[in-house]
Image (cartoon, rainbow, N blue to C red; front, side, top):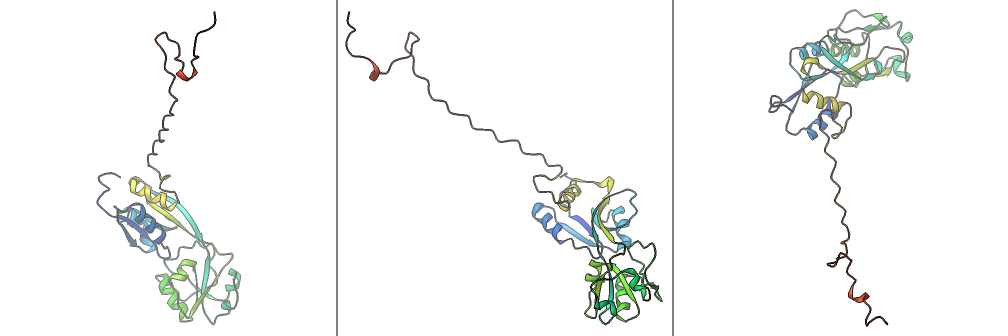
Length: 242
């Protein structure tokens, strides 16, 4: 960590539906001297926040404009359809896009799913946000397809959701300005990728411990002539016979 990085919080941005708790907990354990600040940001504003220096790194939904950004794709989410509990879809475990042909489907302005052909019939309006679209679904005026985490985020007792097997999926990624790849950013990348403390990028491995010197048995003492002295217990008594 450089002097410029010490003494300030590490700022982590995240878009709706992403739950950064597990990575934040690991950061808190490994970097107790660097507090982490969470910045909730709408999907459409995440990249601008990173480019303007409003956060060090951020969890975003792909696709994004990658100009000047480093991006690491993390995971793909199942797409689900949100319906009232009394809708026919609620009676099955999963559906296909063809099953929604006759239903009006909302397409909010903050939708992050890339549709080649939008499912169902166009709804009477395009809500500004996913939250607004969920409210309209609860009013019985249409359906909504979203990543599963957003369906959970906007859960209501009068609504349910089912997987849409052949729908495009949303992908979550970690992004940050390439020219602002600091040691702290590298540390967080290591946490997200599951690297252990000892394998974190940028850390200098500890030198191998020195092996203790082997003790050698003492050599027998030598007499003045250079010959080994014979222990007294091994000396013969008396004189040799002539």
